[in-house]
Length: 184
Image (cartoon, rainbow, N blue to C red; front, top):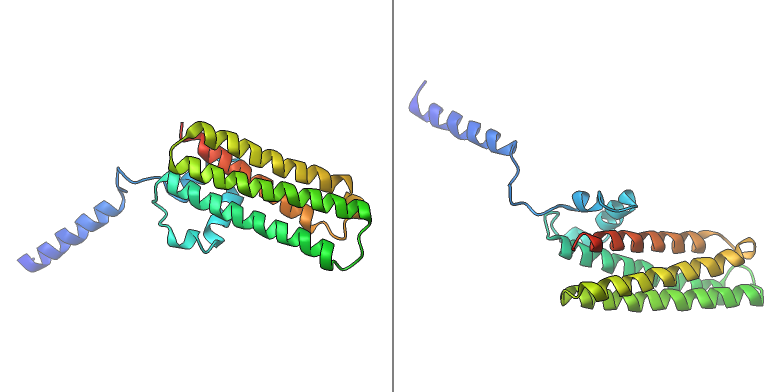
């Protein structure tokens, strides 16, 4: 074999060898982080489907990924709030006063959850772990209150989509809680 062919074979063998050994210092990717949460599939899919998640490398630090997931959750909460308001104002059927009140209470809880998530993000940036957990717990409680309000009038809801969205929001918040717990 000639020396040039030997060098090419050696280089090729070296790269093949390296491909079997990922970097020992690699930060956890999104799938590894999502393996630690209650709703793994929702964690991965919401991250990958979000326009925000597309611009963050999979090997980003866990805190960065958590901040992105919080932003995705806030965006989701904003959509839930908008859908609740739209149903009350422009819904396909007139709502009873009782259902309108429940939608209003639920919307207030979702807006409060978004405010708590903003506080969580601020606490994460300043590495205030206690505030992270307290504000996150409050956001989850707000979402649970919203869910309870809608369930009280579930039979009268024009469709179950809003309730399903609130449940998904609660699951996203549960995922954020699980991720934050890994920070110590």
